[in-house]
Length: 409
View 1 (cartoon, rainbow, N blue to C red):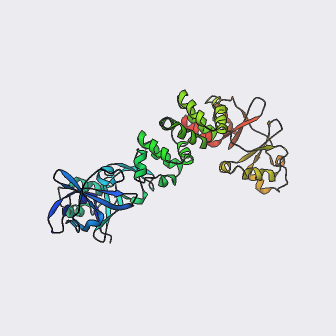
View 2: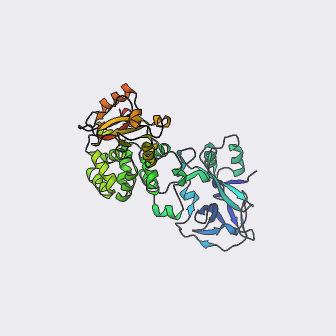
View 3: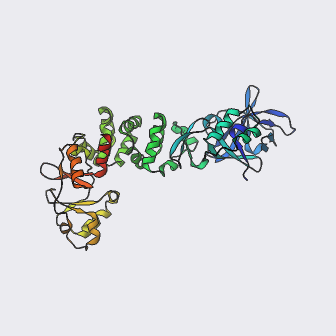
């Protein structure tokens, strides 16, 4: 059975020198993540008006009976930004449980005792057992408290599945805090977490992510919070994130911002995505043009199945949400719509026009969102092309866009 020690038990443990003389009590302990992310590297001993620092390799033994040293060379404590102090920086602080996909508050820390003299952070505790330990800390002997907590179920998070919140970017770097765990989560789950955090922590997490993952996450965040996050970021970072969004999502996000802020971010965006977003911003928010996405696959009316597969290979980023290929004439006017599934039952040389739906259902860019919703409901379609007054294809509205509209209602 793994021998454990809790932070509430560690704090206040008496430290003895090699002759058994009392030096002081443990006041805190720290990790140095750049050296090791789990092993306790330093112990702080309160001695009179000053604190002394003890290294992990000076320990002879650690138990509930106290800590005994094998070397007595100790130095006065000096603040070190490369250290994560467990009582000061972790206890009672919010962290993200990457496996449970939620924000929790730390009430204690569980250590694994190795070789009787090294402490390794095993778990952070968030349940009733740790509350019991906190309530009776210093009131009852540790062994009595362990008996009291015995019948209560363990509620804790493995240390390697915990993500610490630290708004200071320089300190995040020094403490080796990354967003790797968070970036493995589904964007919708991550968005729920982001919405629970303070403004400073939201900004810190989004700032630390790569732009693609940040864009996926922000796309799932409520518009009001999305706007606050973008306003808090450096303009260049905000532009990088919006470039990774689909044009319609980027336009919606910019539409929530103050005009001056929006203009500043647009100025930093690259030409192609900037142009697409600016075109969408010209449409009213409650119109088909305001709902549509300008990313779609359109081919000439005389194209064949092999041409469609070639186009799909060069548009891999669209494939996940793609269900229709559109055909246009030489003027860009919409002529037909081909369900993607039909391509897989056809020969490579078959004409796409021969696979098209009998009637092309479309909506004009100026049409109101109520009309768009009615068309989706009436015809049970997944994709609706948007055309201008000359019937030129300008965008596409998908079912998830309509779901978003209906949720807002």
